[in-house]
Image (cartoon, rainbow, N blue to C red; front, side, top):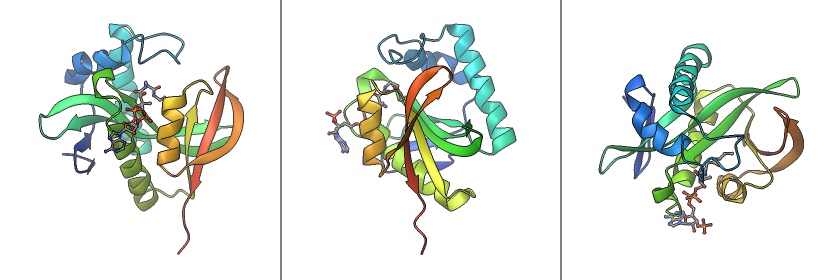
Amino acid sequence: MPILETSRLALREFSDADADALARILSDPEAMRFYPAPYDRAGVEQWIARNRERYKNDGVGLWAMILKPTGELIGDCGILLQQVEGEHLYEIGYHLRRDFWHQGLATEAAVACRQWGFQNLKADRLISLIRPENIPSQRVAERNGMKIWKEIDWRGLPHVVYSIEKLTP
Ligand SMILES: CC(C)(COP(=O)(O)OP(=O)(O)OC[C@H]1O[C@@H](n2cnc3c(N)ncnc32)[C@H](O)[C@@H]1OP(=O)(O)O)[C@@H](O)C(=O)NCCC(=O)NCCS
C-alpha cells in the first residue's frame, strides 16, 4: 500500500526484501560522497530496520521510492523526526539511484512529502539537513520551496538547515 503517489512515483514502506535494490544507492560511493562512508550490506539491512522502527514509533520514516511504470525501487524519500538543537523537527530526506539523477524525480518526491507532511503531521515547519558541499541536494530543497534557516553542527559535521513554514490560511 503506497503512502503517497505522484505522477511518476509511489512511496511505500521498506521491507527486508528491499536490501538488494537499496544497496545500489546506499553502497554507491558516488551517491554517498557527502556521507562519512558508503554502507556495507549489514549497514543497508540496519538502515531498513531503523526505518521500520521509525514507522512504528514516529508514524513516518524514509520510504521506498518506486518508479510506477516499471515497479522498480530507485531511491528513498520520506520524513524523519529529528532532534535539532533540542527541538523536535520533521526532516524531508532523499537518496536517488545515480542512473535516475537529473530527471526531477527527487524533487517530485520531496514536494509530495512536503504536502503530505503539512496535511498529516502536527508540524508548523519542515526542514532538510544538508552538508554545505551537497549542491544537488540543496537545489532539491530550494525547488521544494525551502530557504536557508541556519547553519549548525549536526552529528559532528557542518550542515545547512533548509526550512519551510506551513502557510496559515
Ligand atoms: C540529491 C539528489 C537526490 C538530487 O538528485 P537530482 O536528480 O539532481 O534531483 P532531481 O530529481 O530533483 O532532478 C533535478 C534535475 O533534473 C532536471 N529535470 C529534468 N526534468 C525535470 C522535471 N520534469 N522536473 C524537474 N527537474 C527536471 C532539473 O533541471 C535538474 O537539473 P540539474 O541537476 O542540472 O539542476 C541526488 O543527487 C542524490 O541522490 N544524491 C546522493 C544522496 C544525497 O546526497 N541525498 C541528500 C542528502 S541531504
